[in-house]
Image 1 (cartoon, rainbow, N blue to C red):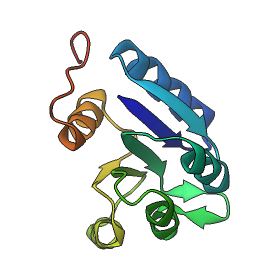
Image 2: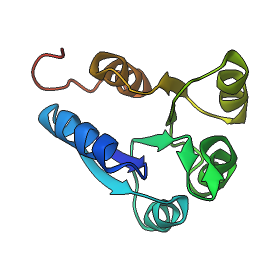
Image 3: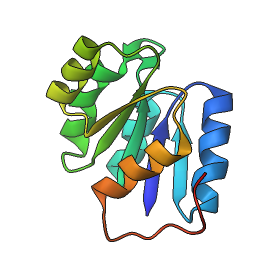
Image 4: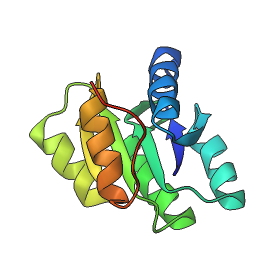
Length: 126
């Protein structure tokens, strides 16, 4: 299963990368929506992990751009301090799931697998 990640926080991307690689996922990491869109135009992915707080564009505003380029790509939006209103707005904008940061490995894996139920990850999840 291929995952594209858009997050400008090095610690977050490093943590996600280690965990997801250990579970058998392959991924590409981008720090901006523009870079990720260029990749999406040339390649296909199974799911996207999108940070809400990005330089110049928030995740909810980025969703229509991503959906235009890759309409069937499920997007899991990751946010700090999520209010019910923010979550609902993100889901209305097209997010498949909204997770609160810091994201637990279990919640992340559950959200990813819900987009493609047939995929079986490696190992156990803490």
